[in-house]
Length: 327
Image 1 (cartoon, one colour):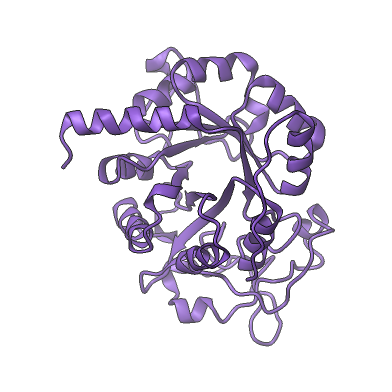
Image 2 (cartoon, one colour):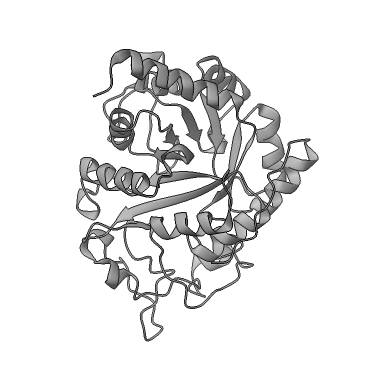
């Protein structure tokens, strides 16, 4: 257990490093508008293009392997079996499948008749693509020679569906173990809508920045300003002036990552005054990217990293250099 003084110094170093960082261009799920999401082809494309951060999601299989997937189980819009048939809904949770079983599915092409396919009609299919492990992604980056790109890793865990993933303690232990084994601890951030996992990361790996995801609208709402929710690990914004930035600061976060439609210039300024960086998700239209930059956001997560590079360049933001990579 680190001493209080050591913990304080670590927090200060994280804050100072955040202030020293420039604008953060993040490829959401590797840039899913361009190539199959959360796959090695998508990550290789993003590295070749030039981005600051690879944004991705992880789960854990029944045999303890950390894999990359946005869903907590096989996605019926993406996963096909050996016969080419898409899995039926709901897909089996990864926590009930071994890695060998997960790798049997092809996730290189969106189900043609799905809403997902209509959302990203220009995505290039890569048949034969498999769900990768986190270790495979680290190996891809290491092989590319890119020593600068960072990883924004989301824990896919839902407090309302505990049977679909490991418990928070076991999940975080597996994730941190995989990161430490590959010696990438100094290049990762861990994000989550489920703040329980972030509190565990802060205790067990205080040098790793935590990113507090929030959504304030619709059926997927995870936070409310007048009460704690199942997602906020007991933290109640009403006890912090009804302010999400103050609540996240109290929880120990380094970065606030709100849905871009929930932020204002005043909220971003408030977060900055508290020492928090603000990285908004998921922004795909050039006009929205421009607006977020002008509001003072510190970074943008986008399915279209190509467009994000274009807009950022037009706004005078220094662009990361691409590193050729092959999956």
